[in-house]
Image 1 (cartoon, rainbow, N blue to C red):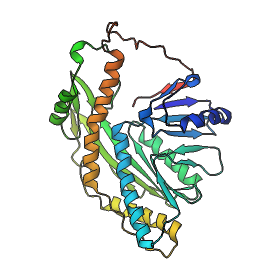
Image 2 (image 1 turned 180 degrees about the vertical axis):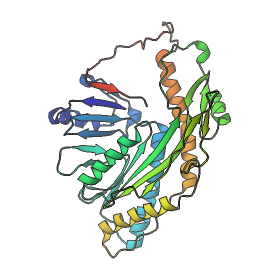
Image 3 (image 1 turned 90 degrees about the horizontal axis):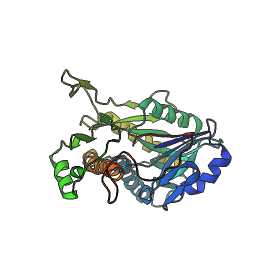
Image 4 (image 1 turned 135 degrees about the vertical axis):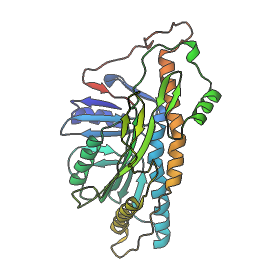
Length: 335
């Protein structure tokens, strides 16, 4: 994730076309490198604060979002079958939304738009972002977008939080893909994943925060796992925790999601419409997220080894071996 300060409307307009493009690109003025694999680029532009946040999701982030995308996509098709007609809505992972009449705009992880490109439902995955910041962002959107009937935050928490390694690598640090598969296979289902005394994925928990329009508080506020460090330095999970991971009752979550779904359907199809059930396959959600953790861990390892490993004609060092542009108002955050 990259954050830029002091980005005015004129500068953002110049960046907007590039941010909406899925091809390989490097924005030299801002030192933004966006690879083709990040075709589902997300961003938040706050015209009042003049800030631009660019997010390039990793596998675990993307899989959490796609879990809800598949649920909503299936329910939308069933609803149209029940109504006997296509409905004026759209679903996407790259739909841009505006906050009221301001110039601020954003791309959420998953969005349902109405026929006028106004958001009805947004889903955001929170991985490295502070939860309070995510809740403030959602509150601002709920207060500034009259059409928005609900927001969902998927909290994917990792303990310990990952911090990119900057120490030099040696030839002994290289690992083949088949060897990596064995490491992931032997690791706990939801982490941690270790290789060569380095932690590439911490222990992961997942919970949801759900908010509905017109309600001052969160309808559902799932507790995340509380990790307590014991005297030996190891983490121990608090036993009274609830959430999607570790598995617990999802009754309150399911009811809240159905209420949001009912509001979305009646907004686009009419107040007298009977919404079809919105059913989330939580087992599939957990399984998909579990599988994605190994891919995220490997991407972290690969980024480190490619940057700090021994390459032909270059000794192992902390030097990235490439020229990088800098800009004072840029701040990089870990992924």
